[in-house]
Length: 159
Image 1 (spheres, rainbow, N blue to C red):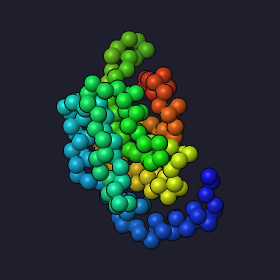
Image 2 (cartoon, one colour):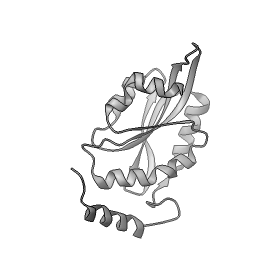
Image 3 (tube, rainbow, N blue to C red):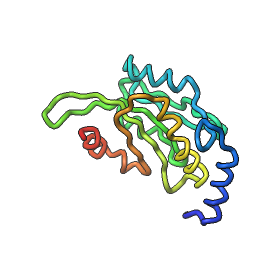
């Protein structure tokens, strides 16, 4: 369902009135998120980690995926009715045959089953977490599972 102009304006005013310097939405990032980012980046002992906004106030760790899990496992843990942020360590092969591994930031925001308020809260808080995860080269926005199709993701990683 598409929100009315009044709903969008009303929510925008609600967000603006709760403004703090942290982000447009007032949402902050828990220190544990940065620690987990450094762990997945440096130790490479996790395949993925997802983050959620708790109580409309703070971005916290949601779910971790072990190194032996893959893209299909990652897709399996994403809720179909709530947005999430995620980091996934993707292994892929370059066009010239070299094995590569890169961290990719994923903004999961399913269009059909999430509320407008949730989508707007996550969209307006995305920069807060991205600023804390210094050095992320790749970013994907996925609005349905088709956006996370293996071939699509692997082609994107090669760019």
